[in-house]
Image (cartoon, rainbow, N blue to C red):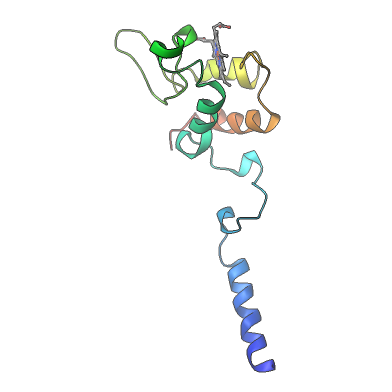
Length: 127
Ligand code: HEC
């Protein structure tokens, strides 16, 4: 009995403490927004596309109100047309993070706004 128990405990301890990244335990609750990677590629893009993309995407389909696309990070248009989330980060802040007039159906969750705040404060990185 004793012979295998100690090594087994040692292995468990290694498995539990061995890696610091939060992705290791699929049952763990998601970390708070300020501890998640806040870059466009790590979740901000998905969040904005999910919450805003219906209206702020392909102008042919939905009009991209205000000439403003949120389904892409960087969409500077030489003709002065549609821009992406990076160029419009201050307006995202004003309308959906500091302010709450977007989306029109009601403000984002506190958690989503906190996550976007981390992204904005970091300079809206693409990742
Ligand atoms: C149901 C459609 C809809 C959704 C969803 C939506 N918007 Fe909008 N948005 C609009 C409309 C229509 C306007 C233009 C009228 C206005 O400015 O209020 C607008 C305007 C804006 C503007 C001003 C544009 C500019 O160039 O300054 C910003 C910023 C904005 N939305 C951000 C967002 C963000 C961020 C989200 C998601 C969190 C979002 N919107 C979701 C319809 C939508």
